[in-house]
Length: 220
Image 1 (cartoon, one colour):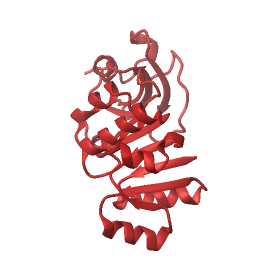
Image 2: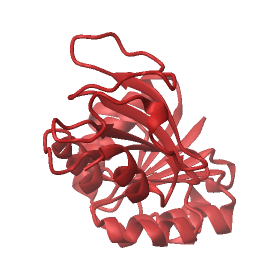
Image 3: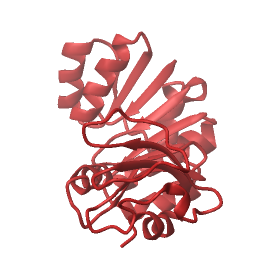
Image 4: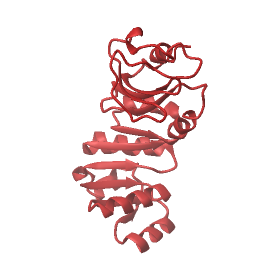
């Protein structure tokens, strides 16, 4: 695959290094000449000084034949613009942007950016796994954005403890597909599965129904 990486900072550098190890054709676009020199010294002729927000630059590096553009600069707006130009002017089939501000995610979705990675949300998801006040943790949004995989914890105070899954009226397009219990092997549940305190339920639900699912499964 021919992959263009916008941003030669630490993230862009290590991403390029790993993708090169997988035998992909990589080009890093970086505006700072010092970073360009550092990347060139280590990775060779895979970096070019330029701004991925500019259509002329993208044209020069053959973006029309690129399979993917990944924007990982430290600026959300620059990342979004680079992906938008790549997608709509050069028809790049896959665009990935890194954002720090979660409120920018709806903008990315409206612009048709293939994948949005929010570092703030990822960090929060890891923190929430240890917070009893957050019984539902988003794990993954599936391609297309209509379905999402979430994790729901069964707290000791939950009304779910000691009850069967069939005792709960689930949402039409939601499914509990895995139960991870303390000291037990993960297993696929049935309606007769009795839930215990500390169980973690991996569920698939429609995007936007997370709060309803939280209400049903947290049982508080």
